[in-house]
Image (cartoon, rainbow, N blue to C red):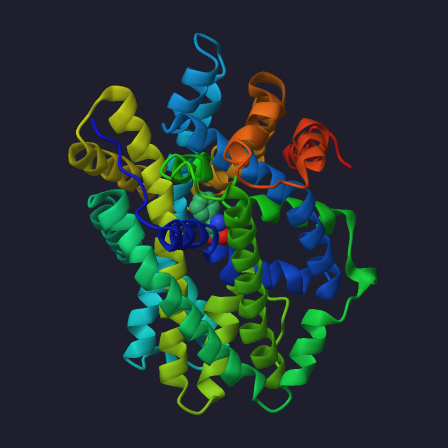
Length: 448
Ligand code: PHE
C-alpha cells in the first residue's frame, strides 16, 4: 500500500497547527487564565511550553518521520518484539476516547451557530442564558444529533486522505480562522472599557497563582499542543525527509500560543466592557459571551462569527484525532482506508452516546463516582495523556537514543540545531519529571 505524504510545507504547518489550535485555545485557555491570575499564569504557561512542549513535540515529529508509520508501527519498528508497542496502542486508544467526548463539546458549538445565526440566542434574557444552555445540553436527542454531525463532518474529510482531505481543508480553514479572529479582536478592543480586560490578561497577579495553577499550566501546554497521543507522530510520518522539523515545531508552537492569546484578547476586553464576570469557568463562552453579544451593535453577526470560529478550530482538531486511529487501523490490520474510517467513526459515535447523555438523562449513572463524560475526560487527560507523554520521552531518550533523534531532527546534519544538548536533557529528565508531577497530582496518588 503506497503511503501518502503532505504535499507542501504550508500544508503540514496548517494541518499540525490546526490540530493544536482547538477548543483548548479558544474555550479552555481563556477561562483557566481567568481563574489563575491572568498574566502570571500566562508566564508560567509559556515557560512550560518552552521547557516541555518544544522537546516533546520535536521527539514526536522525529519519531514519526524516521519510521514513516502510524503510532503503533513506529514503536514496533524501532523496538521489535518489545512491549514498547503498547505505548502506541495507548496513544491510539487515547485519541479514540478523546474524540468521543471532544465531539460533544464541538456539537454544542454547532448547536449555538445555528441559534446565533437565526437570532434566537440574542433574544434570550441574560438571567436565563445559563438555563437555556443547560436545556440544550441536557435535552438528550439534540446533542446526540450534533455529535453525530461533528463526527460526520470529520469522517468526510478524513475519508479523502491526507493530501486531499486533511491538508486541503486545513489550508482553507486555518487562514479563515485567523481572519475571523482578527476581526473579532478589533471589535473587542475598540469597545469602551476594553482596557480593563487587557489589563486583566496582561498584568500579572502573582497572588492568584497557586500550585494548582502551575500544574494546570503544565497539563494544558500538553493538551493544547496535541502531545502525548500520537497525533504529532502520525502527522510527522507524512512529512518529507528534507523538511526542517525545528522550524516546523517552532512555527506550530508560536501559532498555537498566539491564537490562544488572541482568543483571550477577544474575550476579556468584551467581558469587562460589559461588566461581566471573567471567572465563569467552562460556561464562559456559552453563558457569559452571549450576554456580551446581546449588548453589542450587530451582535448577531459577531456572535455567529465567534461560534463559526470555534467550530473551525474544533474540526481541524477532530480530524487529527481520527487520523491517528485511521492510520493505525489501515496499516496494522491492512484494512482499506475508506472502510476503516467508516467503522472507526461508527465506533466513536457509539462511545460518545453515554457521555452525551451524561449531561441529561444519564446524569446519575456513575462509575467510580463520575458520570461517563467526566470519567472519560479524567482517565484520558490525567492518566493516559501524561503516561503517553512520559513514555514517548523515555523511549526517545533511552531506547531510540537522543543522538538518533537529533540526527532525524536535523535531517542528517542538513540543518543546524543549537539546542541539541538542552533537547537531550529535556527529554531524558526534565520533561518526564514535569509530566510525572501532573500525573501524581491529578491522579491523587500524592497531594502536592
Ligand atoms: N490541541 C487541541 C486543543 O487545543 C486539543 C486536542 C487534544 C486536539 C487532543 C486533538 C487532540 O483544543
